[in-house]
Amino acid sequence: MIDVQHSLSALPPGVVYLIVAGVIGVESMGVPLPGEIVLVSSALLAAAGVVEPEWVASAAAFGAIVGDSVGYAVGRRGGRPLLARLGRRFPKHLGPAQLARAEQSFARHGVWAVFFGRFVALLRILAGPLAGALHVPYRRFLVANAAGGLVWAFGTTYLLYSVGRAAEHWLKDISWAGLVLAVLAGLGSTWWLRRRAHRLESASGVESAGMAPGVESAELAADVESAGVGPGDEPVRAGSGR
Image (cartoon, helix red, strand yellow):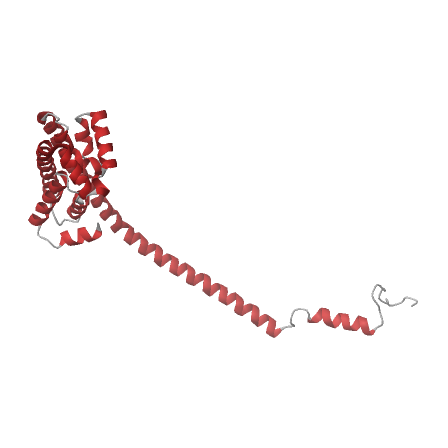
C-alpha cells in the first residue's frame, strides 16, 4: 500500500481521481483489482493535502455504482457460465468455494447482500455479476448498489481522512515531547554516570592511601601463630599463670 500511495502522490490530482474511479469500477465488474487499497491510499493522500477528500469519495462512489451496474448487466447476459469462466481465470479469488459463499450470502440476505457486500472483499467483486446471474430485479439492485457504494466510498474516505489529520497533528506534538524526553534522558544518564565514576575514583583513592582490605587481619593471625597459640587454645592474657 505504501508503494501505491507513493505512486499516486507523484500524479496530478485529476489523474488520481480517474484512477480511483477506474480501478474500483473494474473491480466492481468482477475483475480482482486492489480497489480498496487505492481508495485507502488516496484518502491518506487527502489527509496530507495532496488531493481533495470529497473528490476522492465521489470518484470511488461513481466507480462502485457504475462498475456494479456493468457487472450486473454482464452477469445477467452471461449467467452462470460467465461466473464459471471467471472462476477458472481467477481461481484464487473467484473459484467454486468463493462463488458458493457469495451465493449463500445472497440466499440469506437477499438484495442486502449487495449493500453489505460493498464492505466485504469477496462480495465487492462478485455482487454485480452474481446479482445479474441470479436475476435479481435491477431496480432493487440499483437502490442497494447506490446506497452501499455511497456509504462505503464516503465513509471510508472521510474516516481515513479524519484519522490521518488527527495522527499528523498528534505526531507533531509527540515529536516535540520526544525531543524533550530525549534531552532529559541524556542529561540524567550523564549525571548518573559522572556520579558513579566519582564514587569509584574516591574508593580507589582510599584503598591506595590506606591499608588494603584484609591486611590487618592477616598480620594479627601471624602474631597469634608466632606466639604458639594453636587452634582452639585461648590466647595468653596478661597476669595469667600460663
